[in-house]
Length: 407
Image (cartoon, rainbow, N blue to C red; front, side, top):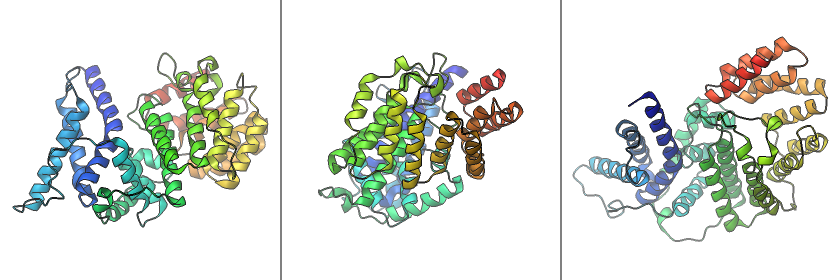
């Protein structure tokens, strides 16, 4: 197999992993019970390793998803039998022929089970992003701005708690009752899923966008909105549709990332923009998703980057900080300040974020560089060089190198 064939096989398998991992993991946990979560996790890893080794370019199984599910299921059954030694599996475990159940049934059941775990919210979110959304440890660490070691610790805590949930929780028919805490948790999962799909931080990725992850997040959002009827969930959907409207303008013909500043706005999908506004109901109480969707709508309404209403966006980010104060929101607020020529205040804000973001968040170093270009060229070069070290993604490296060459 040539180098290109190998890359294509790896990319195809990664795509299936993204699309399939959460589906089969959820399905098998629901079928076998959460006490077997370690066996299911090991079986999944073994299956994908086997796929990478045995599949050849253009010689995949006719139904790759079915193949992956069957092989994983067989690994689980074989390991369960080994662990049971000579004792026959009881009726709860001897499930016989398995087929993939309706995706929403198993996935929502497992998401709900995770929301009930007696652990901190962050640990629930980390476990769900890893096992139900298929994120890697590094992606989770980048998304939540925590260390990879912290991610591993939280995964273990969540797994131990999940294994204590009785299998009957997944089997009984029950009305889905979502508390405010459940809703907040699931909304955070949808938000993180969409962000990772929209701007992937996976080092093996060759593109900033994984549309299938975005579509999955929106699907979960609609599922939750039907169950909850909450305006906050509708606002997440509005935010997702506004961002999805810019899919086709974010990557050029050379598969390179295109910043908002230089995007071809004629490519923005007007139907998706209309759909976003359909979900942008005026809230009874301000929430982060409404404010972020409102900010996105202002960008979409501007004819050019320079004609963007930066004053209004700055006001919205300031309001957003009163609801949730994160380094990323402060970074975006600083960018607004630069656009309004409030350079001293913006640089002061960026300097305050330095300990939190400079080695973990590429947009920090790129933002520093971009807004220093016309003030201190050598310092701008320093921050571009810094950003080259922060990412291993080829398409981001190319973009940064182009900026350096321009300087």
